[in-house]
Length: 151
Image 1: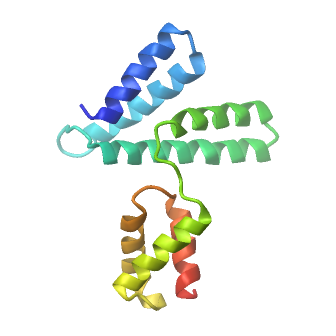
Image 2 (image 1 turned 135 degrees about the vertical axis):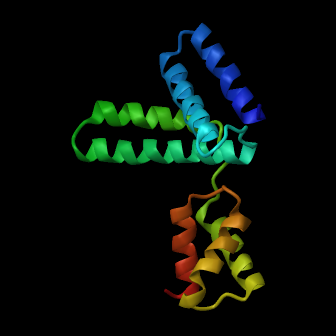
């Protein structure tokens, strides 16, 4: 079992004992998502910590998007619940880079790869994502790559 999954399981049990319903339900949902990812494909396998963090990142993004949708629809109570679930998940994710640090890392990755134009967007994104290593959302990375490539 991965250490991220172990930590989620231990924290869920502690939240269950403390009768913290929000944390318990959020961590159950996260563990279910990890379990679904483990059985996806032809054979069941254990996820690495990086893969488990990728699943948690997706789940956190779903919570942010749902909170925005609920807020736009005037459902403040549901939006607040989604934000709270997102905050629980954020405890397990690596700290996100600020815009300045992201710009520096992307600039370095683009310079090392010699990426300059629109035709190289795909390889440039691959290099930038590898350099960022999950410390920023893909949309933010893509926007910064486009900005620096002049697209």
